[in-house]
Image (cartoon, rainbow, N blue to C red; front, side, top):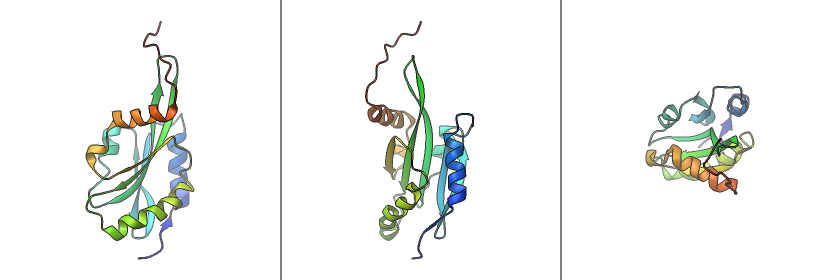
Length: 144
């Protein structure tokens, strides 16, 4: 198996786009093209995000979600490692070293998840993980 390469410029551009509050882009998915990890898709909606993953694929994703309470809203970021259930054991094992290359660029995130089933691509579950990682949750539930 060839040494994995990362399209650093393409990945960095998509990462900056997701992080930019002025951008409509809320997520970017990076997939393997041979031995190179490169941008496969980016977009706005969570439903579009969920549709990017197949059982026979490996991928990385960077996603922005809105968190906070009625007093303050904040953008938080997740790094997702996707290893579909039909990926070979050798390719699964290689993901940990490849993830280190990806994290050199996708470096700022509150939560990191490793997923393998489309059932795990759940917006509310992602938000819950971000809330847990964020610590205190001071919302009163009332906004004047």
